[in-house]
Image (tube, rainbow, N blue to C red; front, side, top):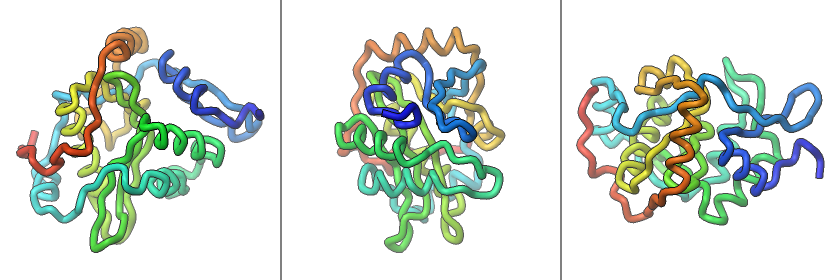
Amino acid sequence: MPESSPTPGELLAGYRRGAFALPNRETGELEWVSPDPRGILPLDGLRVSHSLADAVRSERFEIRCDTAFETVVRACAEPRPGREELWLDEPTIRAHCRLYEAGMAHSVEAWRSGELVGGLFGVQLGAAFFGESMFHAEPGGRDASKVCLIRLVERLRTGGFQLLDVQYLTPHLARLGCVEIPRSEYLKLLEAALVRQATWSASVDLGSTRIEPG
């Protein structure tokens, strides 16, 4: 199998050791990246602005989970202004879809008038959730990915998760409460989360949590 074609097992092994796969754009070879520092979102540290809280409470979007996983992944793979480089090549997309079929990868989706306008996806191992990517569509999808992240945090809290990995800190994620921690600290948190069990339950009412600006 070519170096740029990760298997589901290889992806999981990478997550367990704190690394994730990135195809090298120039060589086509698969690289395993373990950033230092590492971006995480503390599950008790989510910050919601007044305008974003209003977007959640308005129920502008219908939030679903795991109903359009591959569509979300492919939307995240599309180039867009500010992110022309693609890390989700076809083999990596297929590997994540196989993890979804095995119940180990999940999507949170924002729908409006029957159209998918935003979403995110990631992988679950133990009580850790590895957030991979998110997107929103224009027009109609403003704040959609942020609302999905809020609903993801609700679900993770309810299910007993301990770690939400976001890989890298961006200004967008920092405004939502994401922080950077040293890789050594991240690996300790990861080790603790991997030996615990958490539940991703389809029965969670994603709209039940009261959203307050933070």
